[in-house]
Length: 214
Image (cartoon, rainbow, N blue to C red; front, top):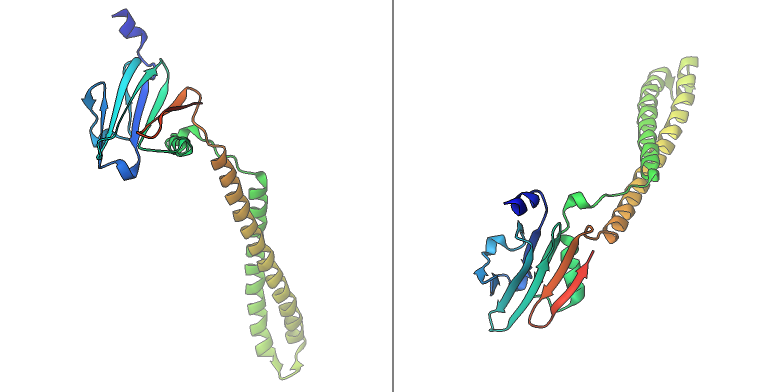
């Protein structure tokens, strides 16, 4: 009973996952018990110690592996993959989102702020230009303008220029921010690895016992 109490809250999780192409044409047993298909790919709590995983494909090929699960360990058993590289990629995909922290460059916010400010400036200047253009239409006949119409015409030309530049800078800033964000995301994905205490074991008729610890 004391041992049972000491193990409360100690993580011992085992995930058995099968390649999609072999999912419906193979059977998996853990310690002699059939693993239901709905539990494949799901992390489940198990007792610490040794466990026996049997994997059999539709053509009768069979592979067996004994895995040892220690206290506080998370282990993923990958079935049906022939290449070790695929094993690591499969395990990386299974890392919980909470284990990955995305780092965003401050330049993403700087360029994004510049983009928003540029679009806002362009919008305001454009609205002012439209307002002054209406004044020009009312105060000018052909090339003859009243003093108020002339002032409005000069202001409209300046505001139109500011609007064009503002939109240009704004869109450039937003596009740059989006590119930087995407680059940061790809770098974060490249750095994704399972947390400490995670390990991977591959089992298939072609590859048995390829392991990776993190």
